[in-house]
Picture (spheres, rainbow, N blue to C red):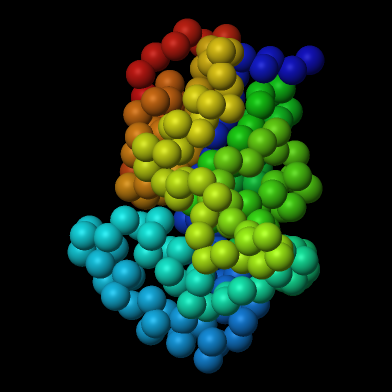
Length: 216
C-alpha cells in the first residue's frame, strides 16, 4: 500500500546520471561541429553565466537556440526517443537506480526535479516509475518549431522548490527526501527532512518510513 505522504525528489544530472545529459543530448542530436558552433555563438551568454552576470536560464536558452535552431517539436521528440534508447542508459548510475526502486518498494512517491529538458527526461522517467517530472520545458512557436525560449523559468535552485510546492499544492509531504549533487539543489535540500548531496558523504540508509520529521 502506498504512503503518499512521503516524497523522494531526485535531481538528474550528476545525481542519477554521471554527467550533464543536456550536453550529450545536443551533441548527439546535431553532431559535434554544430554543437561546437552553437557553444561559440552562445559564448557571450555562457561566459556571462559563469561570471554570474547573466541568468543561467538565459544562457542555456541562448545555447539551445544556437545549436538546435528552429527544429520542430516532432523532430525533437524523435531525437529524444533515440537519445533515451541509444545513449541515456550508459549515463545512469546503478546505485541511484537501486535507490529509486527502494523508494518505490516502500510505497513512496518519487519525483524528478531537473534543470534539463522534460523533452527527453519525461520519456525516461515514465519508464522507471516516477510519479512526476518537474523540469525545464522548451517553448514552441505557432508552427510547432522550437522558439529558442523556455515555456517556464529554468528549473534550477529556488525554482526547484517552487515547482515542488506547486506540484504537491495543499498536500505537502509528511517526509521529504532529496537527492542532489550541486548548488542547483541547495534550496531543495534545505526544504527536505532528509537530504543527500553527492560528494558530501555516503548514500544514507533509508530510515523507518514512520520516523518523525527531523532536519537534514
